[in-house]
Image (cartoon, rainbow, N blue to C red):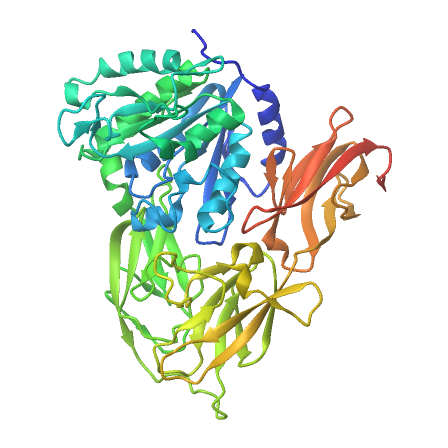
Length: 585
């Protein structure tokens, strides 16, 4: 096989590290494959599947679902995550942009595939992009799965077939980059792939966007993930794009998966795809999925009764076919886009219905019947704000202060006992960038001062805290507000357990080092000034969580990095080196 690139690192080392670390919070699906979920408990979970081959070889990252209206891409990537790898390794991100998939929209705040020209810190898309960059740095090549409009053609034929259409193409940013010959990788795949596609209009073409040329017709591609992979890491990168104008999703998925496996072969990775039928692709979102709300099953029960002021108890009962692992979302009619499976809700204001979606497709709906009276407001007439802080209910009076740390999750629920249509605004936070109307009720807010508009930051009487104000802006209601003081998240110590079951409390010193006896250790907890589940760690190249393990060897000191669980922001690194006894250097 004519290899068209050289691996930039020894892939077996990468997955040797993975085999150590992904005993972690990761779930082992079978020998040679592991899963890990970043941003658990947020509105933007990111599930990653690591596939290790039986023989060593390059590591290729494959991603789908960066734009939620491209169903073929995330279905194809999901099916690939069920494949068997004989040689090399594959890192699969089936659904990179879950919120946009839930709504079947290209983007929520910004186009995530235009956030790779710099390290942004504005929206959830930027946090996900941070993890994508982290994983890409451990890869030897990258394949992006898309679904574009029309049919790419190098010359204008008609409105559906022209150079500004993307469907049915394999896209590269340039034919050659340094010693990488992308055309040599892609052209044999096109030749083989197209022999099996009888309809000429549906055959794939090589699409060179000439991203690095000054006069390119596609300058926006300079912000894309394939361009970043090529320019920043010097690895082969390409996109397989099927057409939205082809209605047969089963056919598109099969062709996209075939093209991906052919590209993996050219890149040095041998994969056997999973078995599935066209019918499986067509019906998976409607099979074996159910959710209950306050004990009533959505779909089976067409009307659900709720009392004003009650808390919704949302429980997924069945998650659908395992091989498709679809994303479930439950939306209230007054807060479309806020997934109640991953967010708490106290029903202070009535809404008309609940809707269950599976990978963005509506599968069940129930009307809401309200019974009982609204909660009673305080007798003194003062406003009491209802919030959720890290999933726990918090009641804050007018003029009080809510104390939090960077990375905490805040949801503004409303005003207790109010019968008005409340508008509550966290000054400095923008829930909807294209319609900044001051309404922040219901949205997940990650408390990160670097993410807010700095002109709204206030001095706090608590040393080290940054203060922002939450203001009631409801028409016709008395003005009320409270402060949110955000402290930096500080790590004090790590709690480890050695192979003998002995607990070790390791003082945290960012940039420092610590000596441990050679062996394996379990990462039990982090002692900090906030909840432990708001911190994750990476041991070398591997994401760790509570219960995960790592190893310290004489030949290889281990770098352990602590990160914010909700932003993946770096909080510092310690180096663990082997010695006879545990000691701080």
